[in-house]
Structures are given as C-alpha cells and as structure tokens.
Image (tube, rainbow, N blue to C red; front, side, top):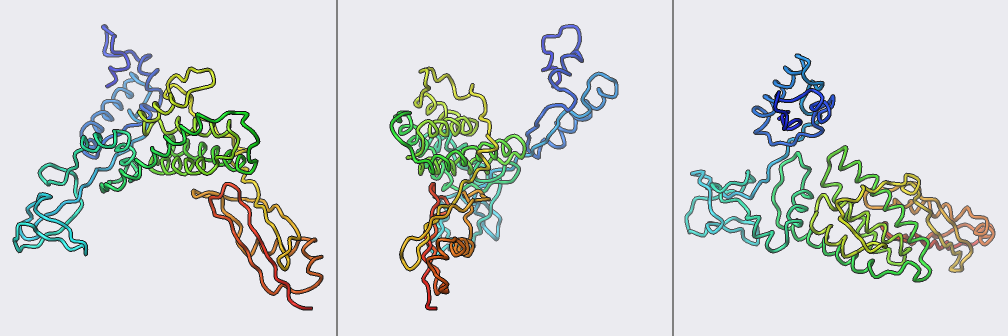
Length: 375
C-alpha cells in the first residue's frame, strides 16, 4: 500500500521522501477494518512496515496510528431449538404477548437470537428497500446512531423512523430560518444567550466526539439536541439562528451528506453563492460562550405578592441542557434576599412553593412563593 504514496515512480517502488510526506512518523491516521482483517492484512502490513523501518526505508515504525475495528450488524434470527435449522420470516411470528409461534404448524419450538446478518440465516434486511423509501442518509444515520462504531449493532427498524423525523426537523428549520430577516425587530435576549451557549458547547463537544473519541453515535445525539434547542429559540436573534443552523448543517454533513448539501443550498448565503457544504471549514467553538450558562431568573412572592427578583448564576450543564439548581437552593436564595427579609418582618416561613422551569427551557425562570406564618 505504500506504493499509493508514489504511484508514478518508474525507477523504484517508492521514494522515502514521498512516503514520509504522506505517512509521516506515525503512519496512516486511522485504520478501519473488521475483525476478519486483524490476522491477514493488518499483520502483513505491520510486518512489512517494521521491516522497511529497520532498513531505514521509511520513517514510520508502524503503518497505522489508530486502529478502529468496526462491529457487525446483527439481525433477529429464528432457529429451531431441536434441529438448529434457521427459519424464514414467513415460517414464524411473534404474538402480541411476546410468544413465538411457528406458522407451519410444526411442534418443535423456536428461539430468537441476534446473529450476524446472512442470507443463509434469513435474517438480512434489504438496504435498497429502506433507501428507496427513506433515502441513503436516513439508513446511514440509523446505523451510526444505534451503537458505537466499534460495537455490534442489533438492527432496529424504529431507528430509521427516528432519524427520518430528525432530518424532517432539519428541513423545517431550513425553511423557517431562510425566511428570517436580520433586522426584523427586537429579539429575545435570554433565548439568544441560551442558543449561543448551546451552539458553542455543541460544537466543542461534537468536535471532540468525532475527531478524538470516535463516538459517532453520541455526536449525532448532540446534533439532535441542538436541533431541538434551535426549534425552541424562534425568538432569538435572527443572525444567531442562521449561524446555529449553518453550523448544524456543516457538522451533519459527514453523517448525512446528501441532505446537508441540499439544505445548505436551500438556505443560501448572504452573497448568494452557497457553494458546497462539504467545502466549508469546520466550525470553531468559542470557549467563553460555551461556558456561559447565564442565570436563572427568580420571581419571589411573599404571601402571593411580588417582593423581589433574583438572578441566580447557572454553573453546570449536561447532555440534556442546563442543570438547574435544586428547589432547596432556590428557596434558600429567595429567603436570604433583603427585600424578602423585610417583607417577612421576622415571621417564620410556614410553606415554600417553588415552580421550576423545564430543564431545556430557552428562558430559564421560576417562581417562588413564601407563605409566612405568625409571629
């Protein structure tokens, strides 16, 4: 394979300069192969490369820097427990109660296991039928989302429907954002701040997941979460919404190249020349914006009357969004406010009522009502 580095060299298999240019000191960045390649191609290529390195013909001691062994796609497989014969899909069915029944009327029971898809096991899924109905991007997303690339995947048709809905949401975002006018009026500051934070936090995490950790299924999940945030931030700054959608499409392109390209052209650009989404630079995260979680706006009532407003800083987030303070912490912050202390006038708090926002709310605010007792 080193010949690919210097394919037009007519005097020698390859020159060291050409190989060092492409292979460097660490070899190929990433080698992807199934377990069946571990003994043959991988072993031979390592042996040859180490031999050439010992003869000072190449700089790299190993041919590959990182090895990723992909998992198998497993299908639901029915077999007779007595004979071990594999059954076709038309020979058995699963009842509503989960019981397995043979349709040929024979008595020998059957069992269902997950095995590597094979024509001889009658457990395969025709990809062309799914592609014809949903498109290649949907099946690609379904496979990548269902399991880490290095683990086996148990094929689930429901994953196809989920990814179809995700791409449909992306199409809706593109239609809506493409019609926005940058100076169409005032935007919601809190929604804009929340969207900006989630955008840059997602860019930061997806970049790490794709290029370092190879956790492609988690990366797709983070893109789906950002898509949901964008859908709930329709009052945010128009330019920011467009920035978020453009970043989403660029990060989606490796997973759903056809859909991302189509939506990129539908979105267009300010200069009217969208070019290709695949020629765009990967988005860069603003670390400051990614860590700026904003604050929780708290309205405090004493005996049903508004007495104070508090901005409680938010300090952490997870994959589902911003992590809100506990009810106890919110109530404690409300009790300690000087205006609330003045309204209580030394009376004890008989009851605390805390109404929390939803965890993924674009405008995190809550209500605290303190019911005072008697002196």
